[in-house]
Length: 158
Ligand SMILES: [Zn+2]
Image (tube, rainbow, N blue to C red; front, side):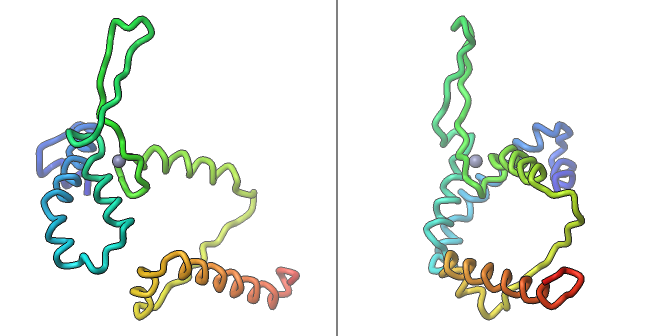
């Protein structure tokens, strides 16, 4: 998708592509937010509004700035602040990489298998409205299911 975007705007620098995509996301939020609120406002949680506000103000003319000075104070640079929100793709690339490295360091030297639990579409609205309780229940039930299966498999020694 980034390459498609780069070709469409004629940008070949990855930094410029990143910057252009970031600016476009803030522009998209600015351009379509009122329409989103008008058509889906009843479904948006306060956390969604907060994420949109953060993305809109991240590292651009709407954000606060930080002043960087070198040790001898002869050179200063101002940079727009990052929002640091977990939904902001611009901020979270570095955070995601660090989190992945921390998780990789915890891996045991064994074979891992992904197990997926899904929620029926009929329950998605309920999950959206009651996220902490719903995800807590889902994880508890998922763990009970795994423990039950493992308990019945003699190769896993109960
Ligand atoms: Zn951000």
